[in-house]
Image (tube, rainbow, N blue to C red):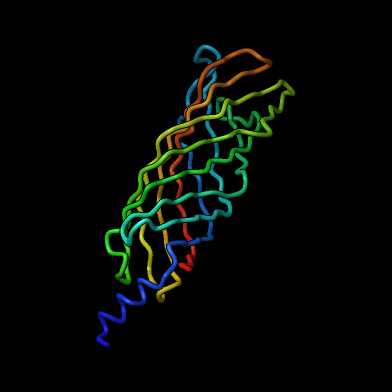
Length: 191
């Protein structure tokens, strides 16, 4: 059996499932918007946390990928000073195209949908803060390094569109664009 046919045989025996575990840095855009008649400028800090991906390969080149993790906690600043905090859970479902799935270096791109749920919103003033959930598009580019047929080390960057309506004590005070760039590193296993 030749090396190329052995490689092809190994590829056909792999499961379509891949799991990745790693860490992600969420970097919201630097100017998130204004509320209360544009009198208050809002910014949201960066946060790092553990994430997991579950991918299903439809073909060797095409995969459906779900990014998830624990809720990320972010500090909310108004006019440069801490005003409160929130947690958000931003799973992203993507359709990925893997350019060279048989190579050692495996670049890929993805396009998908982000759903963000905000929880535990708090203002330091004691006023009641409510941030609406958000749906939006997401983009991705990444690179995996294959250690062997099953194990990879990878990195990717994603952009997600997140816009939320802000309510304080039940009153609508404006919208905030979070729109983070998400930088991830991971270790993957193809079953």
